[in-house]
Image (cartoon, rainbow, N blue to C red; front, side, top):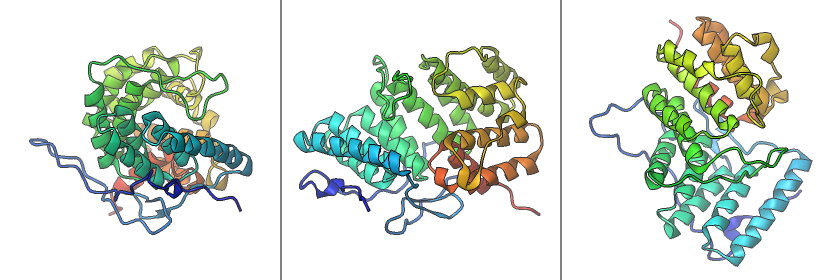
Length: 330
């Protein structure tokens, strides 16, 4: 069986750090309920918000072969330039694509000991803190990245898994605010999520970015009862938008506009779940919530979380958080 070469085997390149702890609450502001950081068993990647142990997702043989080749190239590049920030970031990204999220966090943490003011390292580590169910650590990283990029020109971010057209659809500042908004949203801090998504929309320059931000922004506004603003978000969304990657988000926004039906968007769950169906499933669950159909909403979130192979997907993380926050039956 092929095994991932461990980054730590390159002598002198990686210092392992204990990850955990919670950043202090902002003075004068009552923090939203926090999901506690739980001890992770050896070899596991995370403990879900529902208390389940999460191991590295299974990769098909073909995908694993491609990812391993890219991992090896990143490892070679880092061996040649062990303090190069780009080499460190790509090492972390390639490690995460193989499901080794904790090791990726360690790589970014090591990079930050060399480049303590590099916003990209905070941005990527924050993303993986979301993956391993540590939203408070993610928020701290994204807020630091936002501070470091404040007032600077934005920059295109290269895709680790390029789309069919090989066109990057996001930027550094977009990714900082997008993931920061998601971390707040997952915690249930909708006011903070709203402010962040408004900032994100201002730096969403590609139609894919606009659609992705608009999706989470719309749901946030509706759940806060700010329906007029939510409808304004939908006003510029149409099926003729030039979307490369975010087709699921576009379809869900069209559902919210009444131009798609629930039946149009149903996809596989359980062992057959895909990233697309996981994304759709969470959006359908929220649609039920917004229409007062709570029992169907939570049944949908439970179906999403039955597709354990997709546990790193944002739709899965958000569904898990909804179930964890659900009021117990009286």
